[in-house]
Length: 286
Image (cartoon, rainbow, N blue to C red; front, side):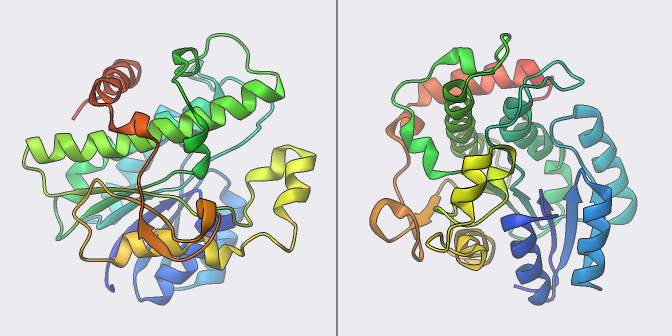
């Protein structure tokens, strides 16, 4: 893979940064899409000529609209969108749009940005949307739809953990349903989901104990953690609709393989419900 234009959200640190470095090394142009301008500029300088910083806050519809406008001024096409930005155990907060911050960042931003950039993706050959999920998606046994867009304040540790699990399940459901709808409309974009296993990242930055756990030497490195992302980007044999996981026990680490998702993902009625609710919330549809 070379000479591609690739947007990676949340790429000013952690797995996103490592993936951006690797993809730039393969002679591609990487757009560092990050809400933190200072960090984004530093990454742009660190990676060098194959990188370009553009400010993006995926929890804000206004920011995503501005990002798309600015992208269209700079670039004529987009080959791959990697939706990677995510937060975990974030302090209680609502966005400017009035949405709970974890829900907005971890799910709504994936849906909205993907659909906004489809016109850019169809201008190239073999375009892909890659949604980075998590093995935490397997923890949900039954969807609690209160976590779709919670009105109440998310404050307890249990609620923060559960909304993280639900949003990872939602974006996996979105990825699979998106491929189904793209196929129905004859749009030649591949929608692929993947997860990094349990690897060192910045996910634990908002909770002291989680921060310590993510720093443990037994954790897989960020270099290992990006394997499934890179595999999803470069593998020409993926048809879309796959979930790329890892081949070792419990999928905590290993080499990329196609895996079965949480069985909830395969229930079309649940995916349709999620899609309709999300489309109404975001004011956008395919």
